[in-house]
Image (cartoon, rainbow, N blue to C red; front, side, top):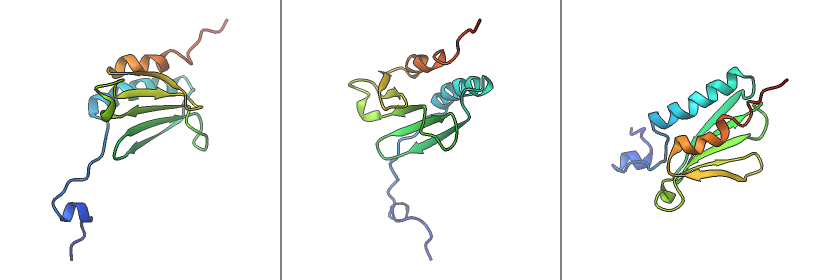
Amino acid sequence: MNMLPPHFASGQSAEQVAFHRTELSLILAIYGRMVAAGEWRDYGISCLREVAVFSVFKRTADNPLYRIEKRPSLRLRQGQYAVFGAEGQVLRRGHDLAAVLRVIDGRNLRVVD
């Protein structure tokens, strides 16, 4: 009995967009700093047909604070990386993930007197 999903059994590969190891290391470096600061507590990763999404949560049951998306279909236009805010607004979009992530990196860390 063949236990493979139909697309594997027929020799086709499942087409999904996913984050590469180097992309995840950039994202997880910021995530680690924000967890250590007590700002973020959970994350979720979705790998779909057209988009890969890394969602960041303050609490597990909440809506995501940020969504980091990778859409390879936009790589020749606006850039394949985008950061969305909690209300769905585009905070930054571009071709370079490190530059796009700068919008998140220092946003929640403020000096308090």
